[in-house]
Amino acid sequence: MRALVMASSVFILQGCFLFDQGDRQAREALAEAQRSRAGAAMVDGDYAQAAQLFREILAVDPDNVPAWIGMGGAYSELGEWSHAEPAYAEACERAPESYDAQFGHGLALQMLNRLLDAVAAYHRALSIDPMSSEASLGVATSYLQLEEPQHALPFAERAVELAPNDGRAWISLGAAAEQTGDDHAALDAYLAASERLGSSPELKHNLLHAYARADRYREVVGMARSMLADGPSAEAAERMGWAWFRLGEYEKSAQAYRIAVETDPDMWHAWNGLGVNALNRWLLSEQADESAHQEARRAFSASLRLHPGQAKVQALVERYGLL
Image (cartoon, rainbow, N blue to C red; front, side, top):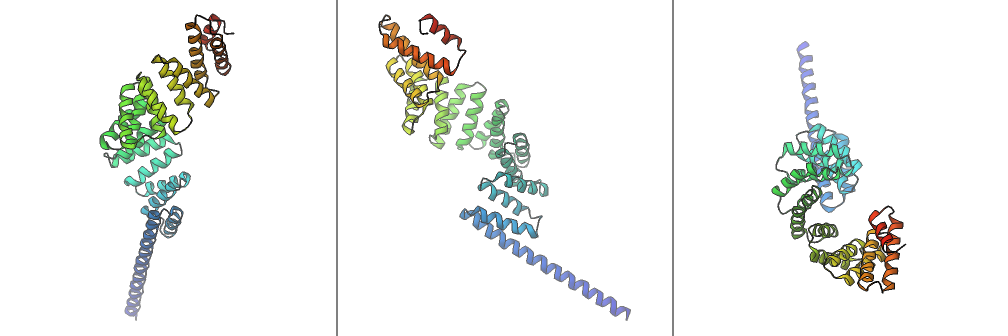
Protein backbone atom coordinates (compact mmCIF):
# COMPACT_ATOMS: atom_id res chain seq x y z
CA MET A 1 0.00 0.00 0.00
CA ARG A 2 2.84 2.34 0.93
CA ALA A 3 4.56 1.57 -2.36
CA LEU A 4 1.34 2.41 -4.19
CA VAL A 5 1.05 5.76 -2.42
CA MET A 6 4.64 6.60 -3.30
CA ALA A 7 4.10 5.56 -6.89
CA SER A 8 0.99 7.72 -7.03
CA SER A 9 2.92 10.67 -5.59
CA VAL A 10 5.64 10.28 -8.19
CA PHE A 11 3.01 10.17 -10.92
CA ILE A 12 1.34 13.30 -9.59
CA LEU A 13 4.67 15.13 -9.37
CA GLN A 14 5.58 14.06 -12.89
CA GLY A 15 2.19 15.23 -14.07
CA CYS A 16 2.67 18.63 -12.42
CA PHE A 17 6.10 18.90 -14.05
CA LEU A 18 4.63 18.07 -17.41
CA PHE A 19 1.84 20.59 -16.94
CA ASP A 20 4.33 23.26 -15.76
CA GLN A 21 6.57 22.53 -18.71
CA GLY A 22 3.61 22.72 -21.04
CA ASP A 23 2.45 25.99 -19.50
CA ARG A 24 5.95 27.47 -19.83
CA GLN A 25 6.18 26.40 -23.45
CA ALA A 26 2.75 27.87 -24.10
CA ARG A 27 3.75 31.16 -22.44
CA GLU A 28 6.96 31.26 -24.44
CA ALA A 29 5.07 30.58 -27.65
CA LEU A 30 2.56 33.32 -26.80
CA ALA A 31 5.35 35.76 -25.94
CA GLU A 32 7.13 34.97 -29.20
CA ALA A 33 3.91 35.58 -31.13
CA GLN A 34 3.41 38.87 -29.29
CA ARG A 35 6.99 39.91 -29.99
CA SER A 36 6.48 39.16 -33.68
CA ARG A 37 3.32 41.28 -33.71
CA ALA A 38 5.10 44.06 -31.82
CA GLY A 39 8.02 43.93 -34.25
CA ALA A 40 5.61 44.18 -37.18
CA ALA A 41 3.92 47.17 -35.53
CA MET A 42 7.31 48.86 -35.13
CA VAL A 43 8.09 48.28 -38.82
CA ASP A 44 4.68 49.72 -39.74
CA GLY A 45 5.28 52.75 -37.57
CA ASP A 46 2.46 51.90 -35.17
CA TYR A 47 4.56 52.54 -32.08
CA ALA A 48 1.62 52.90 -29.69
CA GLN A 49 0.38 49.43 -30.65
CA ALA A 50 3.91 48.06 -30.31
CA ALA A 51 4.24 49.52 -26.82
CA GLN A 52 0.91 47.95 -25.82
CA LEU A 53 2.00 44.53 -27.13
CA PHE A 54 5.32 44.73 -25.28
CA ARG A 55 3.40 45.73 -22.14
CA GLU A 56 1.19 42.63 -22.49
CA ILE A 57 4.27 40.41 -22.77
CA LEU A 58 5.76 41.94 -19.64
CA ALA A 59 2.52 41.50 -17.71
CA VAL A 60 3.05 37.72 -17.82
CA ASP A 61 6.84 37.67 -18.15
CA PRO A 62 8.41 40.65 -16.34
CA ASP A 63 11.92 39.30 -16.85
CA ASN A 64 11.68 39.44 -20.64
CA VAL A 65 14.60 41.74 -21.48
CA PRO A 66 13.90 42.02 -25.24
CA ALA A 67 10.37 43.18 -24.40
CA TRP A 68 11.69 45.88 -22.03
CA ILE A 69 14.09 47.04 -24.74
CA GLY A 70 11.31 46.90 -27.32
CA MET A 71 9.00 48.96 -25.15
CA GLY A 72 11.77 51.50 -24.60
CA GLY A 73 12.27 51.68 -28.36
CA ALA A 74 8.56 52.13 -29.04
CA TYR A 75 8.26 54.97 -26.54
CA SER A 76 11.44 56.53 -27.95
CA GLU A 77 9.89 56.58 -31.40
CA LEU A 78 6.81 58.24 -29.90
CA GLY A 79 9.03 60.84 -28.24
CA GLU A 80 7.69 59.77 -24.84
CA TRP A 81 11.06 59.75 -23.16
CA SER A 82 9.68 59.72 -19.63
CA HIS A 83 8.19 56.30 -20.46
CA ALA A 84 11.15 55.08 -22.50
CA GLU A 85 13.69 55.75 -19.73
CA PRO A 86 12.20 53.43 -17.04
CA ALA A 87 11.72 50.69 -19.66
CA TYR A 88 15.38 50.83 -20.60
CA ALA A 89 16.33 51.07 -16.92
CA GLU A 90 14.48 47.81 -16.25
CA ALA A 91 16.31 46.17 -19.16
CA CYS A 92 19.66 47.41 -17.81
CA GLU A 93 18.90 46.05 -14.35
CA ARG A 94 18.07 42.61 -15.74
CA ALA A 95 20.80 42.52 -18.41
CA PRO A 96 23.60 45.00 -17.62
CA GLU A 97 25.68 43.38 -20.36
CA SER A 98 23.15 44.41 -23.05
CA TYR A 99 24.50 47.13 -25.33
CA ASP A 100 21.02 47.94 -26.68
CA ALA A 101 19.68 48.45 -23.16
CA GLN A 102 22.57 50.67 -22.06
CA PHE A 103 22.63 52.76 -25.24
CA GLY A 104 18.85 53.18 -25.26
CA HIS A 105 18.97 54.24 -21.64
CA GLY A 106 21.68 56.78 -22.43
CA LEU A 107 19.62 58.27 -25.25
CA ALA A 108 16.48 58.51 -23.12
CA LEU A 109 18.40 60.14 -20.28
CA GLN A 110 19.95 62.63 -22.70
CA MET A 111 16.55 63.54 -24.12
CA LEU A 112 15.32 64.10 -20.56
CA ASN A 113 18.30 66.44 -20.03
CA ARG A 114 19.75 64.16 -17.35
CA LEU A 115 23.09 64.65 -19.01
CA LEU A 116 25.55 63.32 -16.42
CA ASP A 117 23.48 60.14 -16.12
CA ALA A 118 23.39 59.92 -19.92
CA VAL A 119 27.19 60.16 -20.14
CA ALA A 120 27.51 57.34 -17.60
CA ALA A 121 25.07 55.15 -19.55
CA TYR A 122 26.84 55.80 -22.84
CA HIS A 123 30.14 54.89 -21.17
CA ARG A 124 28.61 51.59 -20.06
CA ALA A 125 27.51 50.99 -23.64
CA LEU A 126 31.05 51.73 -24.83
CA SER A 127 32.49 49.29 -22.31
CA ILE A 128 30.35 46.62 -24.00
CA ASP A 129 31.04 47.78 -27.58
CA PRO A 130 34.08 50.08 -27.81
CA MET A 131 33.57 50.32 -31.58
CA SER A 132 30.16 51.98 -31.31
CA SER A 133 30.17 55.30 -33.15
CA GLU A 134 26.64 55.98 -31.87
CA ALA A 135 27.68 55.71 -28.22
CA SER A 136 30.76 57.88 -28.85
CA LEU A 137 28.52 60.44 -30.53
CA GLY A 138 26.13 60.27 -27.58
CA VAL A 139 28.95 61.08 -25.14
CA ALA A 140 30.14 63.94 -27.36
CA THR A 141 26.73 65.55 -27.76
CA SER A 142 25.95 65.17 -24.04
CA TYR A 143 29.19 66.93 -23.12
CA LEU A 144 28.39 69.68 -25.64
CA GLN A 145 25.02 70.17 -23.94
CA LEU A 146 26.86 70.34 -20.63
CA GLU A 147 29.05 73.07 -22.18
CA GLU A 148 32.15 70.96 -21.72
CA PRO A 149 33.55 70.95 -25.28
CA GLN A 150 37.03 69.91 -24.13
CA HIS A 151 35.52 66.62 -22.93
CA ALA A 152 33.32 66.31 -26.02
CA LEU A 153 36.19 66.70 -28.49
CA PRO A 154 37.89 63.27 -28.17
CA PHE A 155 34.56 61.44 -28.39
CA ALA A 156 33.53 63.47 -31.44
CA GLU A 157 36.86 62.63 -33.05
CA ARG A 158 36.30 58.95 -32.21
CA ALA A 159 32.79 59.04 -33.69
CA VAL A 160 34.17 60.49 -36.95
CA GLU A 161 36.95 57.91 -36.99
CA LEU A 162 34.47 55.05 -36.56
CA ALA A 163 31.81 56.43 -38.93
CA PRO A 164 33.43 58.86 -41.38
CA ASN A 165 30.27 59.07 -43.49
CA ASP A 166 28.03 60.09 -40.58
CA GLY A 167 27.34 63.78 -41.01
CA ARG A 168 26.07 64.06 -37.43
CA ALA A 169 29.48 63.02 -36.14
CA TRP A 170 31.13 65.74 -38.23
CA ILE A 171 28.69 68.33 -36.86
CA SER A 172 29.53 67.34 -33.30
CA LEU A 173 33.23 67.55 -34.14
CA GLY A 174 32.69 70.99 -35.66
CA ALA A 175 30.83 72.21 -32.58
CA ALA A 176 33.49 70.84 -30.22
CA ALA A 177 36.29 72.40 -32.27
CA GLU A 178 34.44 75.71 -32.50
CA GLN A 179 33.84 75.87 -28.77
CA THR A 180 37.47 75.01 -27.98
CA GLY A 181 38.69 77.81 -30.24
CA ASP A 182 39.91 75.86 -33.28
CA ASP A 183 38.00 77.81 -35.93
CA HIS A 184 39.68 76.26 -38.97
CA ALA A 185 39.06 72.71 -37.73
CA ALA A 186 35.44 73.66 -37.03
CA LEU A 187 34.98 74.98 -40.56
CA ASP A 188 36.54 71.85 -42.09
CA ALA A 189 34.25 69.65 -39.99
CA TYR A 190 31.10 71.59 -40.93
CA LEU A 191 32.06 71.43 -44.61
CA ALA A 192 32.54 67.66 -44.27
CA ALA A 193 29.11 67.44 -42.65
CA SER A 194 27.49 69.41 -45.49
CA GLU A 195 29.01 67.01 -48.04
CA ARG A 196 27.28 64.13 -46.26
CA LEU A 197 24.02 65.70 -45.11
CA GLY A 198 23.36 68.50 -47.52
CA SER A 199 22.68 71.98 -46.20
CA SER A 200 20.13 71.91 -43.42
CA PRO A 201 19.15 75.24 -41.80
CA GLU A 202 21.17 74.31 -38.70
CA LEU A 203 24.24 73.45 -40.73
CA LYS A 204 23.95 76.66 -42.75
CA HIS A 205 23.88 78.57 -39.48
CA ASN A 206 27.05 76.82 -38.32
CA LEU A 207 28.80 77.41 -41.63
CA LEU A 208 27.80 81.07 -41.70
CA HIS A 209 29.53 81.74 -38.41
CA ALA A 210 32.48 79.47 -39.15
CA TYR A 211 33.16 81.40 -42.37
CA ALA A 212 32.86 84.66 -40.42
CA ARG A 213 35.36 83.56 -37.78
CA ALA A 214 37.77 82.55 -40.55
CA ASP A 215 37.33 86.00 -42.20
CA ARG A 216 36.12 84.38 -45.43
CA TYR A 217 33.86 87.27 -46.36
CA ARG A 218 32.77 86.10 -49.81
CA GLU A 219 31.71 82.76 -48.38
CA VAL A 220 29.78 84.57 -45.64
CA VAL A 221 27.87 86.52 -48.29
CA GLY A 222 27.17 83.35 -50.27
CA MET A 223 25.92 81.40 -47.24
CA ALA A 224 23.81 84.35 -46.09
CA ARG A 225 22.21 84.53 -49.55
CA SER A 226 21.42 80.83 -49.34
CA MET A 227 19.82 81.28 -45.92
CA LEU A 228 17.79 84.28 -47.08
CA ALA A 229 16.56 82.29 -50.06
CA ASP A 230 15.04 79.85 -47.56
CA GLY A 231 13.15 82.62 -45.77
CA PRO A 232 13.61 85.80 -43.72
CA SER A 233 16.63 85.68 -41.41
CA ALA A 234 17.86 88.68 -39.45
CA GLU A 235 20.94 86.68 -38.50
CA ALA A 236 21.88 86.00 -42.14
CA ALA A 237 21.20 89.60 -43.20
CA GLU A 238 23.31 90.98 -40.33
CA ARG A 239 26.26 88.73 -41.19
CA MET A 240 25.91 89.69 -44.85
CA GLY A 241 26.05 93.37 -43.88
CA TRP A 242 29.15 92.73 -41.81
CA ALA A 243 30.89 90.86 -44.66
CA TRP A 244 30.01 93.45 -47.32
CA PHE A 245 31.40 96.19 -45.08
CA ARG A 246 34.71 94.38 -44.77
CA LEU A 247 34.79 93.95 -48.52
CA GLY A 248 34.36 97.71 -48.94
CA GLU A 249 30.87 97.35 -50.46
CA TYR A 250 29.21 99.92 -48.23
CA GLU A 251 25.91 100.35 -50.07
CA LYS A 252 25.38 96.59 -50.13
CA SER A 253 26.34 96.47 -46.47
CA ALA A 254 23.80 99.14 -45.51
CA GLN A 255 21.09 97.42 -47.54
CA ALA A 256 21.75 94.11 -45.76
CA TYR A 257 21.70 95.77 -42.33
CA ARG A 258 18.36 97.40 -43.19
CA ILE A 259 16.94 93.99 -44.00
CA ALA A 260 18.23 92.71 -40.66
CA VAL A 261 16.55 95.43 -38.56
CA GLU A 262 13.35 95.21 -40.59
CA THR A 263 13.26 91.47 -39.89
CA ASP A 264 14.20 91.84 -36.21
CA PRO A 265 13.93 95.39 -34.85
CA ASP A 266 15.53 94.22 -31.58
CA MET A 267 18.83 93.20 -33.19
CA TRP A 268 20.96 95.93 -31.63
CA HIS A 269 24.23 94.94 -33.30
CA ALA A 270 22.54 95.25 -36.72
CA TRP A 271 21.49 98.79 -35.73
CA ASN A 272 25.16 99.46 -34.97
CA GLY A 273 26.12 98.22 -38.42
CA LEU A 274 23.51 100.45 -39.99
CA GLY A 275 24.76 103.37 -37.92
CA VAL A 276 28.40 102.84 -38.89
CA ASN A 277 27.49 102.75 -42.58
CA ALA A 278 25.44 105.95 -42.29
CA LEU A 279 28.23 107.66 -40.34
CA ASN A 280 30.71 106.54 -42.99
CA ARG A 281 28.55 108.10 -45.74
CA TRP A 282 28.29 111.34 -43.77
CA LEU A 283 32.06 111.55 -43.26
CA LEU A 284 32.79 110.73 -46.91
CA SER A 285 30.43 113.55 -47.93
CA GLU A 286 32.58 115.89 -45.83
CA GLN A 287 29.68 116.09 -43.37
CA ALA A 288 27.34 117.47 -46.02
CA ASP A 289 24.91 114.53 -46.22
CA GLU A 290 22.47 115.43 -43.45
CA SER A 291 20.20 112.46 -44.20
CA ALA A 292 23.13 110.12 -43.52
CA HIS A 293 23.86 111.97 -40.27
CA GLN A 294 20.23 111.59 -39.14
CA GLU A 295 20.17 107.91 -40.09
CA ALA A 296 23.31 107.32 -38.02
CA ARG A 297 21.73 109.12 -35.07
CA ARG A 298 18.53 107.05 -35.28
CA ALA A 299 20.44 103.79 -35.66
CA PHE A 300 22.81 104.33 -32.74
CA SER A 301 19.94 105.60 -30.61
CA ALA A 302 17.99 102.39 -31.31
CA SER A 303 21.04 100.27 -30.46
CA LEU A 304 21.69 102.03 -27.16
CA ARG A 305 18.04 101.87 -26.22
CA LEU A 306 18.04 98.10 -26.78
CA HIS A 307 21.46 97.48 -25.26
CA PRO A 308 22.62 100.28 -22.93
CA GLY A 309 26.15 100.51 -21.67
CA GLN A 310 28.01 100.23 -24.98
CA ALA A 311 30.93 102.47 -24.15
CA LYS A 312 32.40 102.55 -27.67
CA VAL A 313 29.06 103.40 -29.27
CA GLN A 314 28.36 106.05 -26.65
CA ALA A 315 31.76 107.61 -27.33
CA LEU A 316 31.06 107.60 -31.08
CA VAL A 317 27.69 109.27 -30.55
CA GLU A 318 29.22 112.01 -28.40
CA ARG A 319 32.18 112.57 -30.74
CA TYR A 320 30.08 113.13 -33.84
CA GLY A 321 27.14 114.93 -32.24
CA LEU A 322 24.66 112.11 -32.71
CA LEU A 323 22.81 112.69 -29.42
